Length: 102
Image 1 (spheres, rainbow, N blue to C red):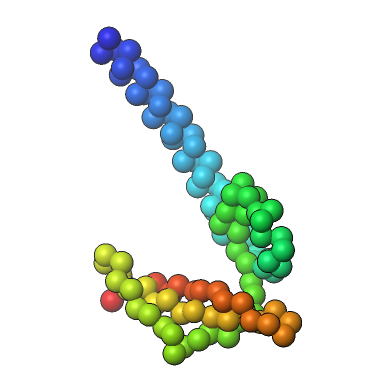
Image 2: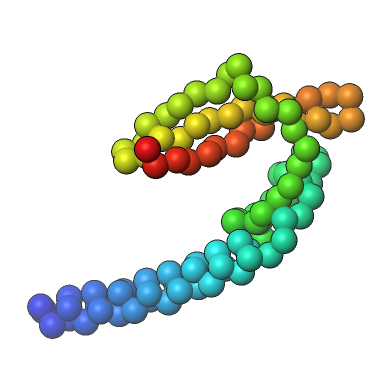
């Protein structure tokens, strides 16, 4: 019985290792790619984790400095800088987090 449990845990660890290696490879590939334009909001429902997770995007926005918030996250401070994304004549809210270890 104990041997069966140990073997199944070993197999689970090997599966987990393969999953993590795939995740790290995807992360490295996506973060090394140049940013792409942020798709319009109408396309957001079609986004998938497999196709868009860790995807670097670029957009034009105005930071709303008067609404900045500093958040302590257990060892570092994260400055939340809300922004209004300029889309034609309307503005959409976005957020940018800047991490700093102080």
